[in-house]
Length: 428
Image (cartoon, rainbow, N blue to C red; front, side, top):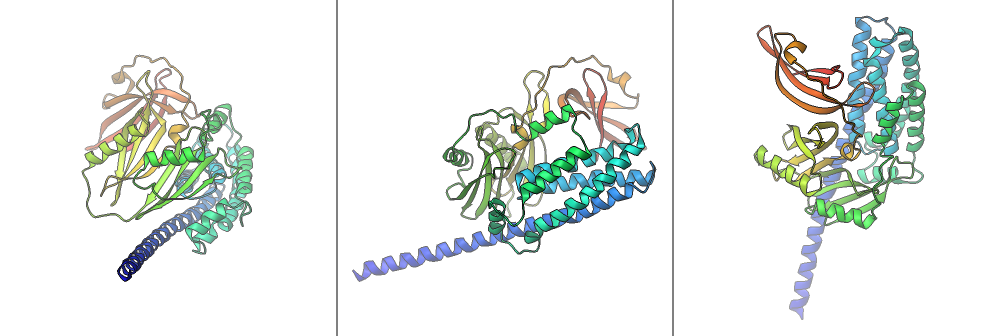
């Protein structure tokens, strides 16, 4: 009997020590995640100050080099802040409205030279400057708790999910939406694009919470053994989704799955990384196999970039009729170098599928279209968004030319029907 009691006591001690160790590891990872988000929020706050300053600077000049430089800064900063907002744990209705406003102010600054009446720019941007000041102040109040390390990650998420949080995110989202509609009225094409971005027209059957969790377990069996929380998105969200948090072994993270259709909006796992690095080709093959198993069977690999721990890969939907890539419908995948585990996924753009239309393709002699010293080295078809936010079938060309002994490389996108140049981009 004593021996049995000893064994049981020893086992209890072992289990307790193991549980304590795992708890400490999860706490450390949560602190790391909280610190990373705090730094990103602080960076967004600093850039928001710079954006406000750049908008004010453009109001000092007529259309001159000084105005152009400030407008270039507006475009750059608005894009940078959009990326930060998209990656932060924020209220969905707020982040959607915020990113839309930032995108519109950046586009307006970029296209200002095409305005028939230059005074229109000053009228619009003067009002935008006032609204940016209000938005900047509200952003500082809303995010100060995490930036100043007053809240842990759990406390921050609870405040976001609370029915009566300290800060009214939905009110701020509504205010920004009103600013957008008054400062930059939507055209018909832009209105359609907004519906697409907000998933208003998604008509898939609803899934239950249990089915959403099963979907998570099917896609990520290696980390889904310990779901620690499932919440529904707040009533003010543009579309309902399940927010599932997990802590399994050394991994903590979350996955967001839409109620309609059970589509993965985003997934993120945080964990320590080993020093080994698998070959890129093996990791790409693993990523492609994962996407096929997850039901994303109409995507093709487009590009990738790396850091010291992982590869960030981009996959693009390929429509079947022309075999054209749809660059607005992409999946971002993050894969760990040491094990090949999927540690990040953003399929939100992919599931908001664009409505595509057939289009004629004019025969074109590129030797006549381009100057004689330009060489077309790659050509494919793609659907891209023009300035009116319309999806157009286009020739997606890579061209090169000699530039004083160096090879200049460009992407040139040409509408297949009108032969208008939609975009020209110099590659590094």
